[in-house]
Length: 95
Figure (cartoon, one colour):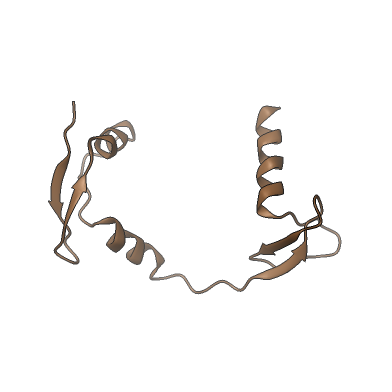
């Protein structure tokens, strides 16, 4: 069984906990190396290359509410708010 480990972030130098659950997840994915960065530094590194996305608003084709999307809506394609989009995805996976 795994036990929580205290590791040192190589970017900021702070201690962080590598939990037993995280270790089990890493093992299930076949990862053999422990993380070198804390969650804050991993997130910062992941987002460093991203630019702020331009968002657009449209009316949800399902409920009529406001939908904020990262693409320019087109008249010939429906746009869904996040709640309705998730419901549609759930319906698709049930089939």
